Length: 369
Ligand code: ADP
Ligand code: GN1
Ligand code: MG
Image (cartoon, rainbow, N blue to C red):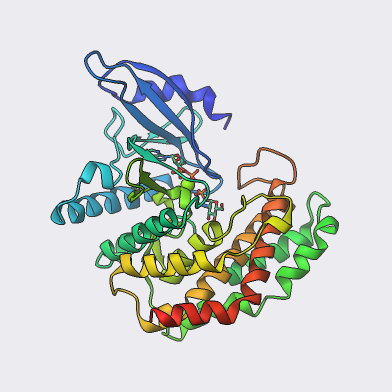
């Protein structure tokens, strides 16, 4: 499979845009899919835009099952939003089918492409520029959780098996270290040891699930700030995107992944670690907002485990970046050398910060229990 750009002509021809297409250009800062914005030129209105994506073949082995999930979830959300008097086309994604009527288009080399309308008058943030904005994302992800609480979980396919199985992620890291395919393990010794020293932690949430302390729910599983579109004017969360990993999972992981990415003031690949610090104030802002959005759907045990969600998602993401670095950067998109190692290092720093502030984090969630 070649660079996504090489297939654009073929793929654009496979969809009926209803108006002439002007062109498509790369868009956004996702690490997984190849995303393009398509510009069209209608005669009587301003340019309508679309989001065209080639789903990552490295991440998703079964695009058919993935799209079945996405269509099921977006249609369900659409109905819930309409029932609550919301604007369906702004607050939920809508899959646009290719001319052949399928859920997505398969190009000449097997690449799977899908199309959505561009949700206009929104912004997509790469960092929590203000506490208000971070709170708005928390309310949106909490609401997402609430809207899906009665979704038939058994109909969802597991698009990435063992996605947030932190024990398995550590096992995969150990295998990558043992294989050391590119001879990179020596330079990552400190990071490898950091992960190995936390082997017991990797079981904390999974054990609570096995013990029946934490319930399985329908969750998003990739709740980065840049996976929610915010209203350009009000700053409120409008539409949750990136539904590739909506699967049965733990609510604490949805909470935790947002904290991992948003409760600090540095980029995920920052190389100056003195700038990478957990902001406990933002942790509290997000806790309050997420629980407000979730509107009573979380149990007391889930709330108590929220700091674990934050620590585990950060640790797990660090393990995944490190594994990918050792395996030759085959999963996460990179734009420079050692970017995955730098990403891993920021996650280690944040995990250490969470450990140092553990009692404070526990006290904060207790306040909202
Ligand atoms: P990835 O899995 O690679 O992160 P996403 O589905 O998150 O892919 O899309 C990448 C980026 O494209 C998003 O962060 C956002 O900026 C933009 N995007 C995706 N879907 C839409 C949409 N329907 N409307 C506007 N922007 C979108
Ligand atoms: C990926 O797709 P994107 O860029 O929103 C990844 C997440 C990681 C994240 C780290 C399907 O998210 O699991 O936490 O990168 N998504 C997938 O930034 O693996
Ligand atoms: Mg994304």
